[in-house]
Length: 455
Image 1 (cartoon, rainbow, N blue to C red):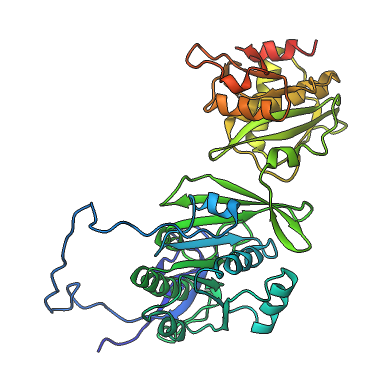
Image 2 (image 1 turned 45 degrees about the vertical axis):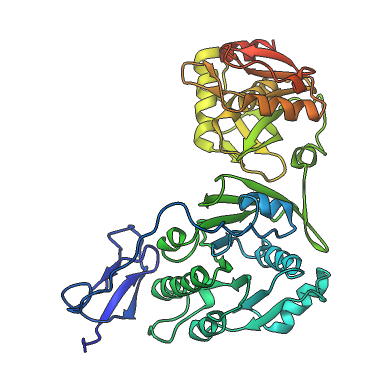
């Protein structure tokens, strides 16, 4: 038997070292190496000298049809997962503390339990605490089976049975441990080993597995990066504490589109679906205000209208301030430089504040034109037309470039009553969709044409 020796594992990236060091050479993080018990040197050969068992191969086309997706009854969650839950899949849900991860999964479990066997295993709360939340959500009569456990050996023995569960929730994976490893719960080795065992059983027995994951202060999932590669779907639950909107975003999905989002509203009785988020984000918008512009964006396959707010004011400091909420600060600096260099706007001595209303974070380049319109509107103190939506990507030479899915953006604008669209030139590649003919198109080829609208 190999002699057990100590090893040091980075709690950020999972790199293994034979001795302690202050800095991890793999991820360049400081003070992340923790001592864990190792298994010594590995024997020569993968099989340890014994012959392996030959595996069997099958064709791509199966003989039996795949089972249908399991519907949770929460349309926004089903949308993000690609149309429902796939049997045997593993889904990792991450988010800030108190954002609503456990609430959402308890609501989904309670809805699915009406027609399927659902297990909810918690390692952070007692059973009575989960029951209190279920009573607040109106799910006290749902046939969900609860358990409070942290030992993966016991959990695996309960799940690896015939005629078992259809849906299993583990809340959270950082609290799970296996006694085969001499390290604390939440360490890289424990998280990796426990996740591998639970995912293996889910694939073997064909139930859907939800793993709740903690996030670091940087907003990334805690634990080894390999955890995100092991699961089939990674969902991030986002939202600002000062807003009652919550965004469920898919960043990885083997069975559906990535970058898909679901929108929820936090209420007293839990998370409520928002089927039309554009109307909700624009509900408190005031027209004829300088510095305000409506952006026709796209989140995954869903078109969404949001309000971009900008304030340009003379700076009393030696260096002008740039403050951004909900957008990329580097891209704001680029747009301001293009407006100053290509259009002659003296923005260098002005403070610029930019905000995406509603707590949504916008990442697509199509928001460039809307941000530029909001900046020029505030700088010239001239409001954007209350019935106009703006979208388009701005290049460094000042050209406004075409973006994807322009017809879907126009349909969403027409549905919400907007009558005008400031957008890139269509270049004759696509005709305006029939159901958006009520929206008049103002083609923009250069950012100077956008600035001239406020003269």
